Image 1 (cartoon, rainbow, N blue to C red):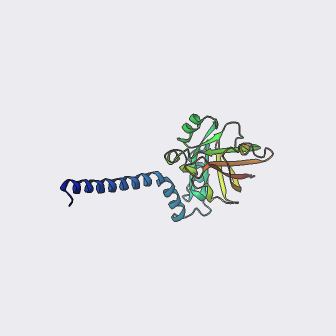
Image 2 (image 1 turned 90 degrees about the horizontal axis):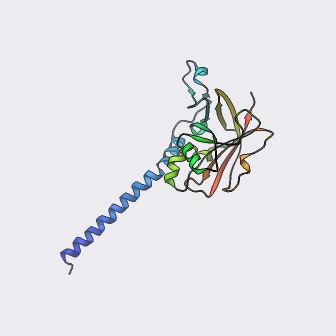
Image 3 (image 1 turned 135 degrees about the vertical axis):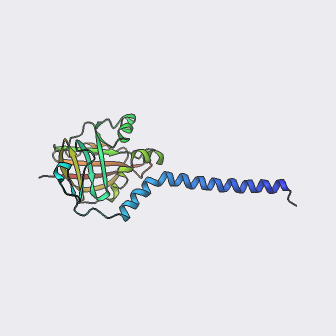
Length: 213
């Protein structure tokens, strides 16, 4: 026959188990919330349909437009509703430096071309070594995998807008650095993030070419 103390002990075990399950669910929700939010926005919100991406000065009285968050150096990707400040000339080999930059926006790799010039404009955002870091550093580029050839990417630099069209999307090894330089004879843009999000296993690369005015 069970004693009262045994019943109390089993009841405590059940309550502790329930509490652990609830805490685990809350941690998972907190961890994956940025991914879930961005995916839900992409799936359920209306997609921008030929919405103009312009500066506030160009917009005038128009309402159906997207303004860049930073006209000095900013990036807008209408298809995935990404709109971020770009931190210029970030040392991609210094984790402290690029993590500081990524708390403010996305990072332009030092030594790569500025927008509008021949060469490769390399912009990156890391997902870190776990989903806690992914939440802090990578939400802006969670949906890069949705981009396909022909999609538009708008980069603003010193008040001027540069339009790029996606040509390639690929997953590459984490040690691949040749995408930093790209084709120096063309005006290119490369976007990079760690993949899958929350790991450092591989890199998701999106390559685009500038559309000349």
